[in-house]
Amino acid sequence: MEKNKLIPIGKAAKMLGVSVITLQRWHKSGKLIPIMSPKGRRQYFLKEIKSRIPQKSIFSEALKWACAKKTIEPKKEFYCQNSSDLQFHIKKLENELSEVEDLKEIYSLIVAAVGEIGNNSFDHNLGNWPDAPGILFGVDLLKRQIVLADRGQGILKTLKRVKPELKTDEQALETAFTEIISGRAPEKRGNGLKFVKKIVPLTHIDLYFQTGTATLHLTDKNLPLLVNKGKTGFRGCLALINF
Image (cartoon, rainbow, N blue to C red; front, top):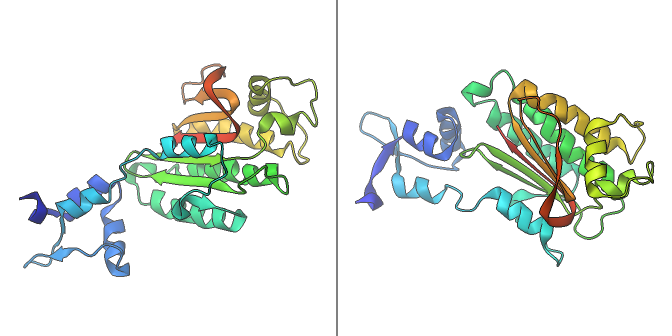
């Protein structure tokens, strides 16, 4: 019966999208205690491992939060209310990605891109959060996805302060990813996104970004940047990284 079925540590790690070393560390910290075999090998109940696999997409959860009409806080484990919370989550992400074998050479760049997107949300909205301050920060190692979302002012409102000729979210998003603007706040976010754009082909990650109704999709194929108008719009920003 599956209820009592035991699986080896290697299979458990693969199902959870983490390394064997991570499971060994979880054992020491008490986060996930294995069953020790007579030969001293770590085993896990299959049912318990399945229960720890996320049932909902972190992207769908982030999109739902960003689009919600009423102000609600994300679940505590995903919520970065201030920059200190963000740095804690970034450090945790760095530790987790450093243990993924095929990311050994590039994980620091992925973390840098995530940090840039997250920091820009705080720089962009400092003292001007329309409702819920902070960002949603989710990581799914099994699906190899990272998502960040905020309910801030959005890029158009920020960039219009220095480029009043911008009229649409699509124009603002294209500007943020392609034009070099001054390093002064609040347009710092645009320069940060150009840094992220450079990282995409270096790390072979896949980036989806949305602000307002404007969406874009960047891959490592160096295709021309194409900004589209999405079906669902919201005030802030949302980024999905597949790695």
